[in-house]
Length: 141
Image (cartoon, rainbow, N blue to C red; front, side, top):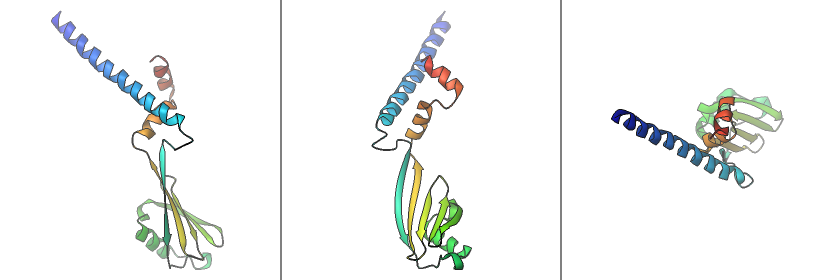
């Protein structure tokens, strides 16, 4: 009888922590999603501007110049691909939907770095009901 009471308390405590935690996650992500016009609760976007003297014209493109530029800016390890949308623009794709848009005539490059927000990304993912079992679970919460 004492063992049953002990396990009943332990289960009650742990299940309570789980449901309180789930309620807090839904409350915070719901608040964040209500203010989606003011800020993106899942991602933060940082912009940086760089100037280079390297020649990136389409006619004189070299992978060595690109690697040197990416090494100087610190983006070499997240490089994915590149292409020229027109003669005077180079678009460099980086991991995590980040990119660099470079004006090849002036050497000015605008980097847009996208990062997931800590905790909010995961909370919003759960709020969007990513799988069937989560939809079933949350409807009975």
